[in-house]
Length: 271
Image 1 (cartoon, rainbow, N blue to C red):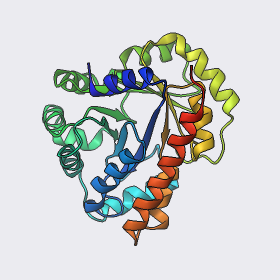
Image 2: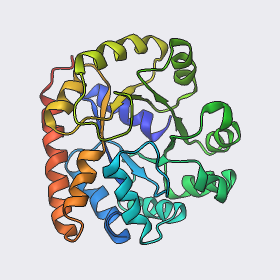
Image 3: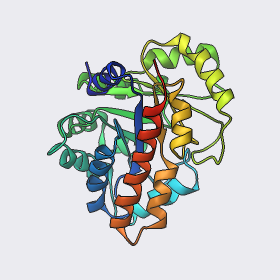
């Protein structure tokens, strides 16, 4: 059983839902990433989604696109990102970490090398935006050989047949995108999200989480009423943008937001 599966099993036993914050590796400076990862765990994060900097992050909204640009000004690479996970693992052996990004830098590195380096560093899974399962067979084989999970996205526009297929291919958990478009949406219709989410649950027995549009304790708690977890990205990355010249302020503010979400989610009755 993977570290991600273990974490969801633990959360279920504790009657809790997963809080999964996202940050871009190397934003605003490389030496800062591991510090904020540890702070998010201290404040209640269950799984960390670490973005791999990429020059054309087409699935991202403006806030996260600029975060990729900030990281790339320091030439933060896929190899650097993996090394950050290794540094994080020196003092945290338990918190799952997944790499979120695009297949392009992985293709350049090579699937086998990527899988081996990721496993050695302590990475638990990959979530790639621009590669469907049919085109990622070789990578999937390499990852599964190393015991790494492959996580796929399911969207509101995904047909039932396609959703069933994607759910069958996912390991660890399934990521349900709450809306059409890119990350960073201002509002989402929670009633519609819940209805579609509940419909899709018939296709899987592994956990399914919701991302896009979750920005505060209230929205995270609302999602916790029906989903297995909440992913928060743009709301956290916006803190980086607002305080890019003051990393210490980022740590404090991100910690406060994560704590707010954790507290709100834990108040939701999930029995």
